[in-house]
Structures are given as structure tokens and as C-alpha cells.
Length: 492
Image (cartoon, rainbow, N blue to C red; front, side, top):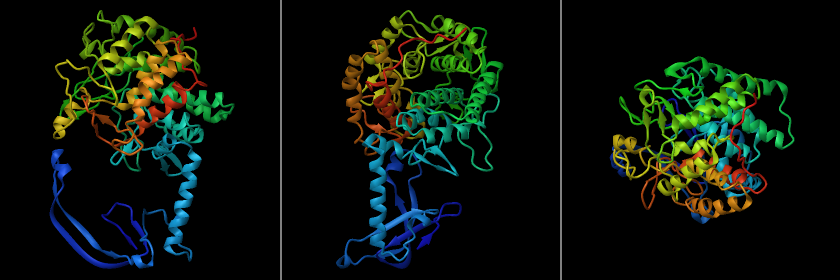
């Protein structure tokens, strides 16, 4: 049996051992408790098209539901529904077993088909495939697990979408107009390309020349677009650092917006954007040596622009476009100057001080807080209606994906030794694994409350949370793959 819930949605295919009796019934004024708690419309009419009846005396009830397009995989071909179910379950068990351990099986859930290629769903149940999330998650979901073909397909799909140095927020559906309002998505793409090429080389695999050229051209187009200036005031300053932002637009990953209110505008020079930019310039110098000079200038200017007398990095330099003004909020974004990226941009002693303060002020069993307690804007719990929740989204709320840069930074400032990796695994990573059964079973949630009991919130299945967990397990904390401990030293 097939039905289509609404125009524009896929047809649902149903195969069952039971019998179906058509009996449409409306349940009027149905109360949705969770929607009411979240401040959304919470009363609606629900429709049941009919009833299935199963005779359990004949055996277990079997009901298979799947979306349009699965017909080729489930055509009964003379088999009974129970035999079909047994075959499907067996094939799925075999597929999952080939993936390895539970972390790899969880990560596999986010890699899906897009046309003839692949893409990464940012989270379930309500996210699609977004640029920033894709490139961050790809490092763990694909590269750390050896799924190089999937990484290649994704990176090549995006390579042709660079426009004035920027990549759109999401992969375009047919007929959609591109939306460009992210300063960091393009830079994360450069990082993903670099780590893909490095992973291929480490595995003794060759990237065909045409594909390497396509990736290199995309990287160089991003650098040229940003250096020369592009949308929303994004451009390379005289210092070599990258400035960005205009009123009313949220450009960084801290992108909550309610109506015209941009909760964390971060106009100026956001700290993690500088770390990404310096890394991107260093990577670009491998394709075109002239970018090394800009990487050197930006690296030299970084500490003076961001280092505070209190022993940590400002969140934004030249805040709100005012030269010398600094946003001194203690946030996890500064961790990217030490961990989470191929090349640290802060010296060892200062990096160690930052990590010590971050552990004391930001770390929770679910990962780092997005803002340290004590700040006037700090919100301990992510709850209430849309305005309250969006207002808390990056104002203390914990983000598990940031465990990646934090733990990598901790390992680096402790020498990057086998002992440091073992200590970090026991101290931070293993407790984080204990959170996998709290929301989406076997997965890490998108966010969590900033205070005990650190309740998981937001999307219960989140790609970059799982991606960073896999990257930590397979790369950062793995004895066979010690993390780099040197700061960026671009070729001159």
C-alpha cells in the first residue's frame, strides 16, 4: 500500500503481514505537550487513514515502512512479508557489522545519498545538509573512519559552488537561490580539503590530478575572494588578519537570530575566524607560495590583537568595527588557536594558560560551555519559548562538538605524548562517551544545559558532535596518530 501525506512529500510505501481497512478518522484539537513547552503552536488536528489488523496466531506482526525510492530494495518477488523482513534485517546487520564499532555505526547515519553523490545531514530530525556542519563533521565521519571516497565525493560536489570566495550555507536544491551569510564555512572547507589530501597520502593512496586541481582551485578561489574583499565586509586587513561583519547579519557559527536581533553579532575580527584564516593561508601556500607571506603577517599580528592581561584571548578584536576595542567575553572560540585545527597559532605557554582557564570555567561532562558563568549574558538553561531558547543558544549552552578542539588543545599543551593522550582519554573522552545514552541513543546531542545535570537539548542526533567524537577517538587520542604540536610556520 502507498500513500502521500501532503503534496511535495515523498510517497510512503507500506508492506505488512496484516490486513488494512480504510477508515479515515480525524482527531481534533490534539494537544502536543512538548510543542507547548517550547512555545510553539501546540494544538492541531491529526488524521488516521485507516486500521491495520494482525493475527498474532499466525506469527509475529511485521510492518515495513519506507520512503519513495526504496521499491527496488524491497520488491517482494514472491517472498512473504516475513521472509522479506528477515532478508532486510540480515542485510542491515551485515552492513552494520562491516562498519566496526558503535561509534562508526552511529557516524554512518549522517552520510546519505544526494543524487548520484553523497552528503552529510547536520542532524536528525530537523536539519538538512549545511556547509559549515558538513566540513566540520566530515573530518571525523569520513576521514577518521577511512571513508575517503565519501569525503572525495562531498568535497568535489562543493568545489564548484565558490562564489566571490564564499560557499553557500547549504547545498542548493534545484531552483533554490544561494544564501551566503557564513564567514567560516569556506574556511572549514579549506581545512577539510587539506586533511583529506593528507589522509590520502598517509594511506598511500593517490588523488587523481584533475580532482586535486579542482580542490586546489576551490581553495585558491576562497583565499582570493576573502583577501580582495567580498560580501558583508569580509576582507583581509592590513595586518593580514580577516575582518568581517555588518549589522543585522550573523556570520560566525554563533548564528542565533530572533527577528532583527542578532544575539551574538561578533562584528570585527572573531578569534576562531583568525585561526581558521591563518590555517587556510598556510594551506593555500602549499598550492601557491605567495600566500605564505600573508600567513606570516597574520600569525605575527594575532597575539597582539587578542591576548589579554588576564591570560586568555579576546573573543573579538576590533569589536563592532572599532579599532582597538575588544570583546573580552570568555568563550570557547579561543580554543581554535591551540586545538581543533592543523596548525596552532598561539605559543605554547600562552596556550597552556588558555586551556587551564577553559577547563576551569567552561568544561562540563557534555563538553565546553559557550560562555563562562559570571558574564552578564550567561544563561544556565536552554528552555522556554523560541526567543528564550535562541537567546540562550550561545550564551552558556554547552556544545559537545567543541570537545574536539578542547581535548586536542589539552593534549597539545601537555606535550602531545602517549601519556598525555591516555590522560585526556580517561579524564575527558571516556566521561563524554557516557553521555551517549542520554538523548539519541548511541549519539551525542546538539547542545546541553550549562549547569547540572547538563540535560541534552536541541537536536538529539548531531553530525558534528559525532564527527568530533570519532576524530578524537581515531586521530587525536590514537597512539598511532599523535597530534601535531608545532605552531604554523608557513614557507617563505
